[in-house]
Picture (cartoon, helix red, strand yellow):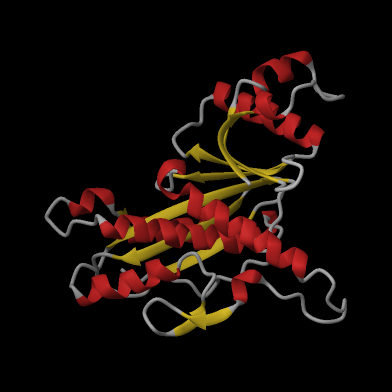
Length: 266
């Protein structure tokens, strides 16, 4: 059962132990874009919210912390998706349905032999929209096919949608996706995920990278190849320097940085 645009106060009627009155008053007025509930009891199981990548003010961060405190106190799993492109009204339902399916797959596979590799929803192989065989539950699969089509139509300089991911210690999982629109500029997307008790059986970094690829695909639909296109693209040299800085911070990651081979040619 899926509920949309719910105030936290509609889901939690009584102030939980350990939450201050100030936290409670601020948090209960906040909205959650999507809440997935148990179909039998109607109790909320997990929530997903989309955060504007441009909102960095102190009040916004404080309210977010209070919301997280209340969700944590009542055991409501919360996933926060921060993206400049992915929006709850246009993309949220597809993403939330995907997360629910991934959790159902994880729960159904929970009784496998402990010595056997744990199956992953993301790694199921089947037939892709373009007829190839690949990972059918890759959220970026459609975008990767769209990049090839855009290259054939001479709207891109390269057909490959590239990406990487990182999971920061005491911070978000971060996914990048980019495709070369010109020799020296690329269409770039970054998605950050904050998992507050949330899990769906897919590594958060891989999930963030797939969402970043999907965001690139959304922007490809409206990519204009006219003379003003450069204003919405990322300079590849600048992106290369950011990747170099990411390598230097590998000790701050919870996962192994496996992208030393990524070099941008400009």
